[in-house]
Length: 118
Image (cartoon, rainbow, N blue to C red):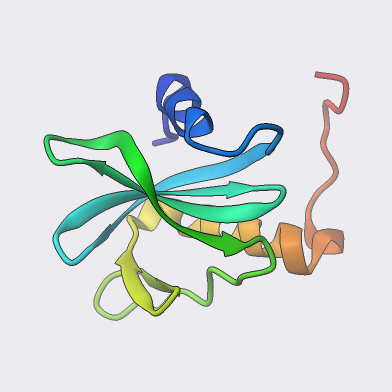
């Protein structure tokens, strides 16, 4: 299930001005919830509220955009490593991880935007 527009806007409020938000997906590490936000300039990990796991609360870490999110380790559940931390992601967001990496490292592999004027 995609992250709602309201959550995306709350994430955008915690980013530096002018960054173009590309991908957002929830992740979990060490019993805490996070939102991984991929922009045109960075990969930002946002800590979420204790009782609102999809509500961003603060910037937990920032990484350069050229940081790889994958490969995804599938045993026993999908996990990515970012900044030395293993984050568990839901199966439905594995494609998002792949798309974010493809955009940064192999943009020729992405399909063309069918509606570029929207």
